[in-house]
Length: 244
Image (tube, rainbow, N blue to C red; front, side):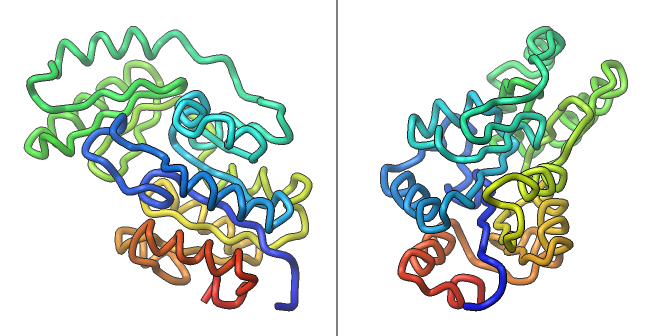
């Protein structure tokens, strides 16, 4: 395949692993760890994860296999590259805000409260009838505490103002060994739309995983399983098949 070398930028939830009923139910299999590590080696380090989860969450799920990789976490507020981690210190607002939200949505109501370093995920997948109540609470909390609401797949996330995944793509693509390569982004949710746009603006390609954001991508793959198949094609040297 001629042209610039490829760089692979991967969302996590819904892209490398299936979405689970609750965030803590997601697990990273040894097969996924091995596949992603092999793809990173095949691309000479030009592989990055870009996730709305915090870096601490991702490290807890992946273990040591994630350490050598470039990771943008918390929608780009955190970045670890070449072993160096950068990002602001976690603010004190979120532990206090979680306690307030827990009073509003006790566990019996089915709304799952996900604590992150730089945000709070309010998941209503187990309680879809509570969607409007969750949205209203998120809007009130965002206005009171100068936070941003990030809608997602059956979740409203409250997070600090700052970068989005598109900013993360642009930052990563300036770093060695990514600079000068062609970014290929895979993502499944609303938060991935700016990342796909950024990859395309840099001469790259965007895949939607599933149909949710298909209208914003160059092509669609059906599921995380098909993402794994594409990675397998890459490892076999089938670069053209990988992006078509």
